[in-house]
Image (cartoon, rainbow over the protein chains, first blue to last red):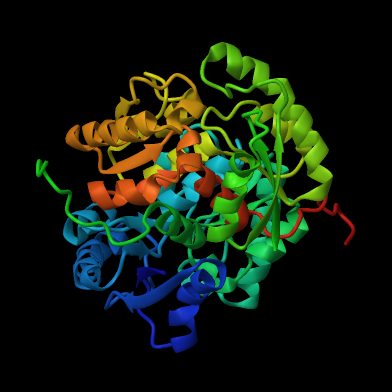
Length: 222
Length: 222
């Protein structure tokens, strides 16, 4: 069993919402998940300023979780604090942004990015490079929790249809509020395209590339 | 349940060897696997000529498997015929080379590529870009089946140690003969680094990004 420490970048007292990402992972992969939220960010990460504020908070949680788990998942498509968390944790750390982009590249050659910002998160765009086909966002949505309303759901479907019309052959969910919405299956059904959930992709990378807790490398004992 | 059609690019009458990749996937992920081998390649894919020969054979098998499965996995780190298979199959197709590279990028920033050729397979190198740290191969190994000998196993460990010494923070298995060897867990234990198996990474991409068989997109019915 692989133990994943999951860092939510949304501060919430809504317990079902808090546990959603962990439950999605546990339902899909042979992992157990311990979730934690960074403090002080009830609007999550949605712009450069909120991203910068999240970095030291993610780093601190990664250091705190590392002794108890086999790998750490930063459950935000902006991958806030990914290099910092890797350095602090000393165990594998995956972010939903780069992992999702990587999984999308494995499935298609024209990636349609569906998020909450007009540009793809840098964490995803850096991995995607050329195969980024188009970026769309629900126009009424400013922060991740705005997705979890009927307006957010309708506009998410419409945005995904624009991506399909633009020629995308795979859809990347580039805000993990879409994981909380649980919309991937319905988009797959309606669009007839693979839809990549970054939280699941990061979990799969940890589950497949990690295994038992790595130990320090033995040196020159023979 | 996700049904994966798995294309082996090694022609073999050794039934346990033939089924190894499918068994690895079924043990790790909630998928069922139907395996097929391309004909006429008892040495698998190990150079430009054998790669070119594999392309139409992979394409033909992808077309044949597509009606029966939800996604197709080309179980070779060179991803022979990946674009051709995508076009022929019309369902998600993932290759072990690009998927493994993508999963490695999700786990580290200096990828050590362990294969059977002096250069990384183009399918992996194209995805890795800058974060490719070093490439190593067991010197006595020419074709994938050479890996499955004591010499192949010893030299694989030594090659992986050279990658760790060169500063790799994640190891990418860039020949699926290493999946057949089942060496990932032992390398993780000895090196203390995450080790990415491309077959598992491609399976995870299909399992997470695919779901039920995509259907043609409904158009303008409302």
